[in-house]
Each structure stands twice: as structure tokens, then as C-alpha cells.
Amino acid sequence: MTQRDFFKPGRSVAISDKGMAATSHPLATLAAVDILRAGGSAVDAAVAAVALQSVVDPLMTGIGGDCFALYCAAGGTPVALNGSGRSPKGASLDYYLEHGFTNIPDDSPHAVTVPGAIDAWCRLVGSYGKFDMARVLAPAIAAAEDGYLLTPRVARDWERNSDRVAKNPASAAYFLPNGRAPRVGGRMINPALAATLRSVARDGRDGFYRGIVAEEITGVLKGLGGLHEEDDFASYNAFETTPISGKYRGRDLFECPPNGQGLAALLITRILDGFDLRDPKLSEADRIHLLAEATQAGYARRDQLISDPEHITFDVEELLSDRSIEAMRREISLERAADLSVWDAPTHRDTVYVSVVDRDGNAISLINSVFMPFGSGIYAPRSGVLLQNRGAGFVVRQGHPNAIGSRKLPFHTIIPGMVMENGKTRMSFGVMGGQYQACGHAHMLSQIFDRDLDPQRASDQPRSFCFGGRLTLEPTISEAVKLDLDRRGHITEWADEPIGGAQAILIDHERGVLFGASDHRKDGMALGY
Image 1: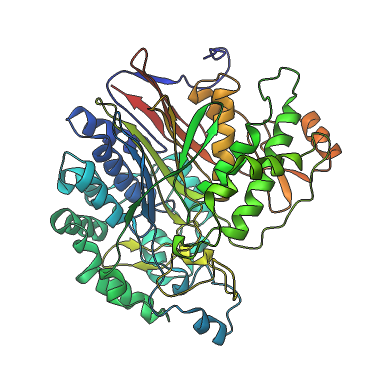
Image 2 (image 1 turned 180 degrees about the vertical axis):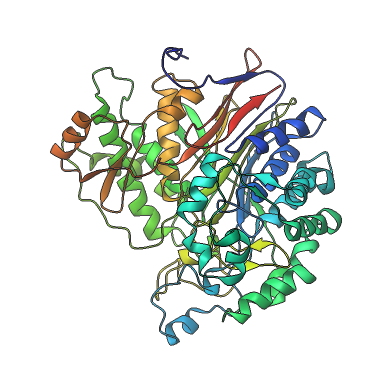
């Protein structure tokens, strides 16, 4: 790995040999490392971190959201956990068509699927943890009871998205004290959420999916016109499944299978694997252009095909086959942009991602989200639960595989990633940023394995994203590069906020060293011991 220029602002890659955690919030990283130092597993540490972040960064994630994870025991093969929530039993497509819906409003109870995070956490800790849920949730409970201070990126996002909770009286009363978003360094407390977390610590998943918490949430949703019943919560289960994978530079990239967009990340990386991105003659504009074109091809297939795995209508292996990928690759010209498609479904950027490796070499890649900023904006005040709006990802159209239906899983953007090399975990990583995530996985891999950058420098590189008819560029990209891309037919624009955020832990097995990174675009850090 090449060294960074120490004259320039930035941070060094984190180094350790016993264990490491990388998150987008410093308190979450510290909680994870404390668990590791106390003898907990990577899973214990990751769940402790994401639970704490569900308290201190509530517009990005929460126990009212969903979770996906990839876990690989040392010497084993990755397993995937799908903790995405289902629509209510009564949510038939006919209901929405008969009531004149053309889409699922993102601030309505119909956008709320049963939150999957708590069941996913309990399953992970029960299967792969060393500690009980009470120990794992203790940092989150303490933060909710004793209070926490807003870090700069959290406060910025809270203020920018305050309109999403201002419309709901219960949400506004909690999230906008004195009628406005709290400032940097402001203290918040949530004893109702602490009580719910204590219930989960004591009773496991039943502390959320049965009893007073489920009763309140379903009551709130039904009061707003939702179709949820308590049995929709009681019958919910996260589930393990087999990851999907594809080659990049001789390594295996593992992703969760649909209903997530990990398939798109594999399509993009498989397409790029056919181009020599190590060629020193390639310009920055060439690299951005090729990533944009591969992203266009991958996302076009993603949007047509990905849905609840029980409703998949295509062969994943065939789509990822050499024949299929080569056909997509042949459509790409280095000199001319393909026609840009326009996305007409909901977008979002709000997620948290956690990567942990423990002293035994077990690794977990975990992502948790409420979808849009503050999710649906619907809040259950006695339980302290802010509800996601993943159901806005459904379409209301006959014949589409992602059409809303009874107890169905919607298309999901959140994807953890894991790279294997010679049968061992090489990297646990993830990229936040909603629709950007699949493109972000490809960008990170290329920076590390094509440009020989350490994970931190790879994360620090300027980003671009071809989506929704535009090629968005971070302003750290030069005007000359932008003009070059315009010449090729791209419709470019400058990003009005940072694109995504990444965490990664790279494992050097030969030397027994962990290299960790956390994106400068967020407040977090990577830390080992």
C-alpha cells in the first residue's frame, strides 16, 4: 500500500493486531472496542455499536429500522442475515389500486414495514455472540438514559432534515425541542427508548415484537390509517441465507442476495473487472466515466429485477455469468456516455454501517437503516421508536416483481460487503449513501485493489455517482475533469453534499495486521487495540 502525503490534511489508516471496529460515530466505535477488549466477539461488538448509534444518530438508524449483515467465522465461509421488514398481511396490491395509490407516500403508515433490526440483532448475538443481550445493549441503554451530545455531522443532518419530523406532533415534540433541531454539542435524552431497550435486554426479541411495544406501534400506525396488526409483529422473523458472489481482480466479493441491491454491486464490479484500471494511461475522467457506465448497466438490471426473494423471476447465476457480463461490457464506449436513465422511485442517503474483526479473526459487516432521514417521521412516544419507511420502495403496479403485496419484502438499498481471498476474509467493508451503495462498493474496491491505496486513502478519494439522469461529482474533482466528462455526453453537476460514507477493515493475514478506515465525510473513526 502506498503512503499518504503527510503534508496534506487527512487521517492515517488505523492499525492493530488484536481487534478493530470501524463506525461512523466515535461513541459507537468506542463501545465496540470496549466489548472486544472485554472478551466479546465481533458480533457482540457490532451489535453494541449499532444499538448505540440507534440512540445517538436517530435520523440515520434505529430500532424501528432494518438490518443486513455478512458474518464470517475465522476459517469459515460467509453467511448472510436478512433483517429487512415485511409489509402487513393486509397490504395487498388490490387494496392500494382500489384506493387510488400510484406510489407509497414516504411519510405515511403504508411506508412502514415491520422493523427487522431487533430480531436480526438477537439472532446474531444468539448464534455468534459470547455475551448476552443485556451486556451488548448496555452502552445504548446508558446513552438513552443519561443523555448524549450531538456530533457535528449528526447535528448538520438533523437540522437539514428537520421538516421530516416537524409534520408529526409526537415526532416534533421529541426531535425538535423548543421547536428547532438541537445544535452541535446539544444534549438529548430518550428514557422511553431506554425502557424499550431494557425490555429487549430482558426478554429478547419478544420485548419488541410482542407486548406493550408492539401494541403501541400498531396502535399509532392504525390511528394514521395503516394496515398493521400485532400479529404482523409477532410473526416476523429475520433469516439467514447464502450470500451471492463474484470475482474482482482474483478475489471474491460477497454480497447479500436480493431483496438487497448487492447484486448491482456484483454486476458493476464484474463489468469493471474486464477493464485494466491499473493502466497509468487512464485519466481520472476515464476512471469516472467507466464507473458511471458500469453503474448505469448494473442499476438498469437492478431496477427491473430485484424484489422479495420469493418473487424473483430471474436466475442470479445466469445474470452474473461471463456471457451476460461480457454483453454488458461490450455496450460501454470509453469515448461516449450511454443514454442516462431517469429514476422515478424514492431515494435516500441515511444509513449507518459497522465493520468489526475480533482477536480470533471472526469478521462481521453490518448495516442498519431507517431509509430516508428520520424514516417515515412517525414516532411511538411511549416506546421511543421512530419508524422506518422502507415500504416506500415498493411499486404500485401490476406485474412488477417489486409490487407491494401481503407480508412482502421491498427492494432494499442497504448492503454490507465482504471480500475473501484464498479462503480467508480479506476485507469487511460497507459504503453508506442509499442508492449510491452498490456504486460505492465498486469504487472502494477499485481504489484498494487497482490503485494500491490503504482503506482510509481509498475512502478519502473524490467520489462521483451516475444516477437519475445526472453524473454527480464531488467538488474535490477538478473543473477540467468535469468538462472532459461533459464532452463525452455526461450531464454533470456538482454534489451539494458529500456522497456516501465508508468504513472498512482490511486483514493482512501474512503479518497478522488489521488496517481500518472510517470516512472523513462522517464523524466516526476506526480504532483497534
